[in-house]
Image (spheres, each protein chain N blue to C red):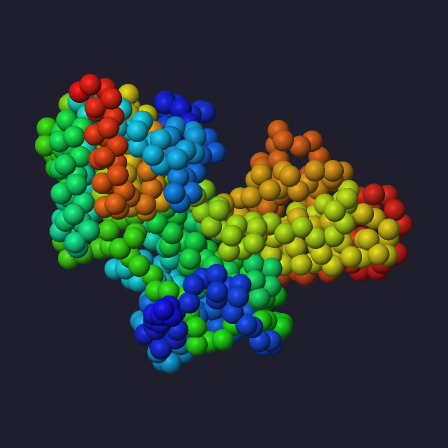
Length: 401
Length: 189
């Protein structure tokens, strides 16, 4: 007897397919797109229920284009919040009601909304935030810088850092799937470096737009969705849990550990859908190892090519795709044989250098050098990285930056 | 669960920080070992049949008739309690309890130790509890009591329980009851 297959469609009339089919198997065609346009394409294929937006450079265009998807019938609910704090609170309300949700922000907007991120995590809401990083400082800058990632690292959200628009597309889709696993179910922040990815065009391979992810099933959530009677998370008005002199420290300790445990549980799912938590590039025997994420990794790869082919220096890149969970074991394994570890970054504080030092401490005895580091919108040409390495090694600098 | 009691510098043990994750589909987690589901079920039944004041803590997913599966699971929980000679203390919702819970009659995920201390419970089964609340409660129980915890989860499991059974639906619960009956006979009870 011939096997019958039940075909399901979402609200936009797209055929529901498995995440594996959408990410790995569906035929793809080439497009020339900006990162912002890629956000639209990913959301279009993700059966998204709700999105809330607020303008701030450089994410405004992506937020606007999610609005277009609402007009076209691909997104169920879309509106503009009163501020970033409003947006992140309202999107939490949508998620508590059982919706698949996505929003976007950048730079100072991230900090204005800050209180909400640990609230999302503690309420176990699998909201996706696309962060197009632009840095935080006064005087204000709208240039590429990813300082705000530093503030987000300990909010209880998963954080993935895309290197390219292509990777952003795939990470947005995979992000929903991983974040919505019942044993994970914490927010996912997909980060790109603003302008470098959001506003430049690159070739992107996209699956057809008549297929989409299965809808979110809130009945598998680790907390019941909000109802007419109960407050979110079922902890408000409980003097032992919320803000009283009789507070239960045990509850709070356990709750906080549980949120972090949930991030750890995401490892196998993320590893599967991202094809590993790290990427290794360059000469496998390279003594110079760049550990980087996002655009800094892309620049380090270019520098590695120059070092290998023009300077005869064995070099390689260990690119971190996920920051939370931090790929500690993968990193320890990947840097074996290195003589020096360089951590190039687009921010003034060197948050990735701190993370790398913490992960490697007590496991490998290799000097970690937080360099090169640029901030405030400065670019990091590969030649600049090469110069830094050559000077460090006491070699002649032939390249002029 | 890797070991009972404190973990590292924290008085609160967290199994994932001891490199334990939930078992893969078809398997179970027993302390720090991935084992066949049947082996874990036998040990779970043995713990419930040999320790003092065994208790089943059913949660909202089996206490309320959301759907046919919930009804059937509720019936099986009663049968399981009979076979194991266990008490049933419900975690009937996760609402705030003011001024505090009645530990004779209920268990709350934020203060599960109160119920376990009050009733001197040495073995328990969590079933039908939403995953977040089960995880919060299991960590507190592990830190604050010497109760042997068993999680029968309809989803991916709970690594902070001493025995974790995942994807537990009516068929699996029936299997557990059959195994419990066998173990009971073997123990001459």
